[in-house]
Length: 406
Ligand code: C6P
Image 1: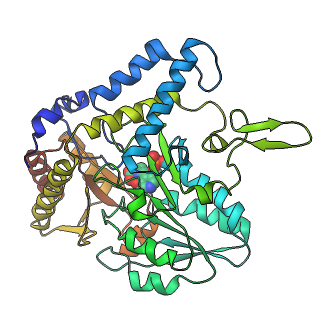
Image 2: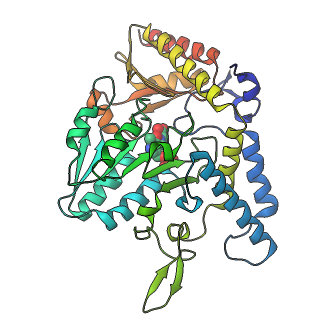
Image 3: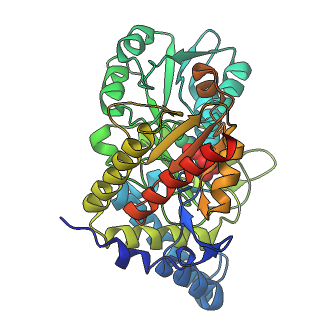
């Protein structure tokens, strides 16, 4: 299967600009991917001619906007193969989504002495909300360890699962290492004890097809802006058996059935978890991003990306001063590295002078940095619109950084 990357790039207007006098090489896709023209145009059309509040008005525009928003929810359902559209809850992003699950599931199901299993490679968004829940509920966060390659130690995980475990919080793909975790097997192991699993899918949905029913995920959370959609959009998918029993996360307009000063009752799913006016344009934009992905050969896109990652890994591994952080057997998109004696922020700054955008820092994964005993890493992250030539430019620029500091 061939992948016509030059044709795909024409869909992304942001890519055809120069930065610091050089053609932009955008390798910060794990932070935020770029939006293709159809997404930009769909949001602009909504803002120009369709904008109105949803689920409230009897007038034309309100009904029209409601239909567009709910159509986007249907697209999400099909994209992740959710069994029920009402179990797909719109949130503003992955962080808000995980906070929703941690707070609401915590209130419903976690108590004194219980344990929450969280992996060592999680993003802070999948650590801190669980710490807060643990503190509030008198529970404990227990860490699933990883090995030197940045792979979770599944035997250790299975040993840690026990009768006190009330939930497992796990990233599908690590944002700092690129590791693809064996979530399907890990979910099956948790389910043997009746323990639900919350999958942080922020870094998987942009890179390969997902199926929440095949994974048997209890919760599956992601952001729109990493999957070629807008900021301010995101999804919590949850199994109805949990969502129906969980209390609302936020309360207010739109999520109630009846309010009186004596007693308030809540609306059914998904409204119960969608208090207030949502980010309507962002939700519709997420739907347009899904349409865009569906119009591609996503399997060929994933293969192209994988080849870029392998080639970049090969090129950087050939440079003696470079250490690659995260060498798991199964990886997606992310290449983290350090250079002997050079701070990652300096790498990022010099690469920027070459027009190359990467991220330098702890990537909101400080426990990963502590594990490898580094303050930060430089991270290149690929999307299907990146090219082999851009990988060459990255490798050449890294060589240049080393020469600057020699
Ligand atoms: N990671 C990165 O550069 P938000 O910010 O809510 O859209 O997503 C949070 C989040 C949660 N989980 C994972 C695995 C993530 O990678 C992220 C966001 C970005 O790696 C920004 S820190």
